[in-house]
Image (cartoon, rainbow, N blue to C red; front, side, top):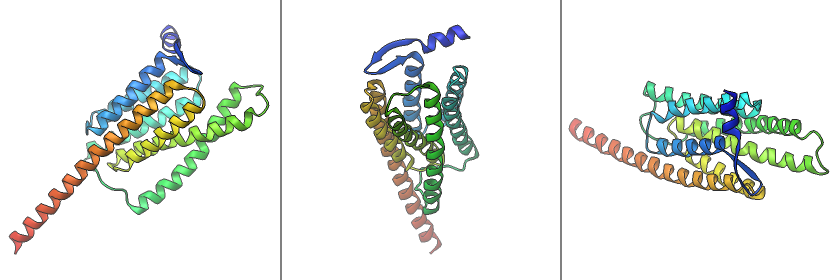
Length: 231
């Protein structure tokens, strides 16, 4: 097992300041493929995504990266939730977010950003035992930015799991912010993946929005037909 772990985490290439591993490549491919599958209403994408996130969480745990493992475990739980919602039939078509859901989402997202930011800051501090002058401020800013990116992905999955079109906008925010942070750190591999994720989010929004409009029109026509028959 540890031989496989070494193989997955061995450097493949260096792009800017970023070392690219096979684990990172597989994770990026799985992330983008899952987004496309969800955009195309493939319900089986949810359990597959849950299993993949769980596997990557286990991999991070074996590498003693507890914060990464926790983040990936949350992603796995959200994907499993989306699968359960669809199996129960509670989501039949894309819909719009309500005012109450938006308010709850903002409050929970703010709390999650604080928790994730402090977790990332703690993980960074444990890696850099003797930081350089001014490194604390810089790493703190990066941790808060990364926390917003992570929580935006949480919001995206939670919203899409409930069939809310707004989830794609949360994903787009995450992708754009990720591009900015990665470009600032010369992590060009992440820049490419984040730009691809932004394209997937726009594509997903277009697909879900078109389906939502079509369903609304169909319901309106059926309602008028029922009223005509009743009259």
